[in-house]
Length: 171
Ligand code: ADP
Image (tube, rainbow, N blue to C red; front, side, top):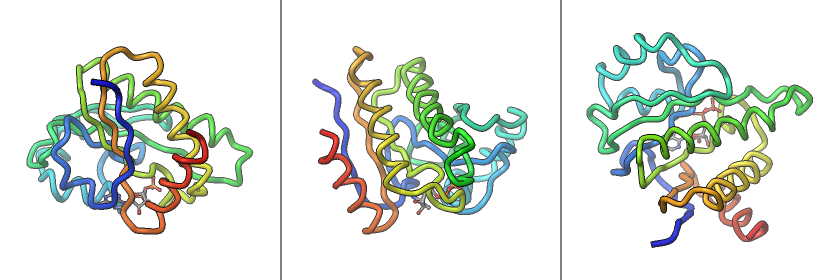
């Protein structure tokens, strides 16, 4: 079976995949947006587990169990805060995707769902962020033999439209 990359709309916490990705902050102790939703759905054990990890620098990723989530694992990554584009934001966002994909491969995961990292409270322009996400996922798929099914999850319809049109633009 070949690799698969698809856009879907919905709540990432409802997905029964090997891992969902969390757009976390450096504390790994929860926050708003998708981070808050993941912690609420996973239950308090996730927060306790994250506390022991001692945080995660921007651009890196950490894996935890999914606890009460239908997903088996959560891969937490910390995206860059958009500061206008001159602060290495694009390179840092790319490294978030690469580090999540590397961790997923190291753990033998076969299905993975990404939210639109950094494009909410962190303010990264959506289409630029989506281009980076697609580029990194495709590069990974080109070099990784183990087939993986990857979902790009849009919380709303506008985001879904941007992901779908960007997938076509760069295919
Ligand atoms: P960041 O701080 O990295 O910008 P946010 O959580 O504020 O993270 O937003 C990242 C993206 O996740 C946004 O597109 C937001 O709409 C989306 N999002 C928020 N909640 C969910 C959810 N439950 N499932 C999927 N995506 C979500």
